Length: 364
Image (cartoon, rainbow, N blue to C red):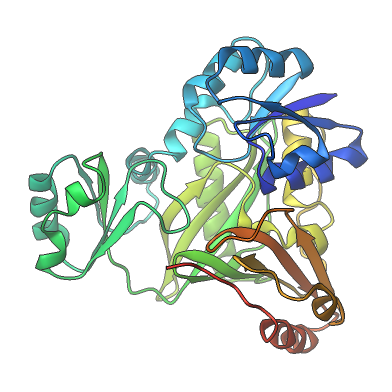
């Protein structure tokens, strides 16, 4: 079976590596002729809404998915008229629009920070009086890794902020003094079966994910799984979905969902019987889902902007290097390293040694 993937970045690349042992090949559609996923499958160069390129993709595949949410939902809807496309256009449209996803959370009774839709500077000024400062102003669509947003700390920050973010539809979110951030990654099959991985604690730097570590037996696991399952059921979702939360005083507040495999789930390649990438392929191909338990102490670090010395990293026991075959550039995710160990104490020692080698360049 060939499966089509809209997008040809590192997430698609890791999907392909998980699909090959299952006898499944991936065909990618990406605007770049040097998309890093191309080395792991067939690459069709073209814009995501290019009718000819989409037709070529359909001719070579039996099912289609996508690897990031900046794909036009109309493209997925068009594809779904001819062959199965998972997740659905509705799920994509909801997840890529911050206001639509927040409205879904509210409808499902999932707790979240104060939020308001912003369509003008006057909307913003009114919302600030209701929500207060500090707050975070974000574009409704197309923002990721801290892009497309501005923190409003005082009245001066509010002046002209709507125009500063492009005079496009925005959302204002109340600033949350949280303890830490976690994500819950789950997979839903075509028949509605849901399996979830352990909650992952995430550490960000300058808006980009730096480190992720799954937390076995987390006291909020059941609550996170219930929220994730409710969202997937409401969207009739098929595939992997990530749900990011703030943890505040031993309660969860919803942040956002990502309708795809997720950076905070990269640890599953070495740390679970079936990785998030394998389970995504299994789900959309109609295959039985794999186990999602954590098999050993594990943590994941992103390699951003610059790569550390390969030999030095691999000299640390339990370090697993994943290169995305991308040219170095400030703020660009070039790969990740997963660290494994037999005990939590050994994991912490290995992580400490790895952190001394990292030379991440996050940009300005």
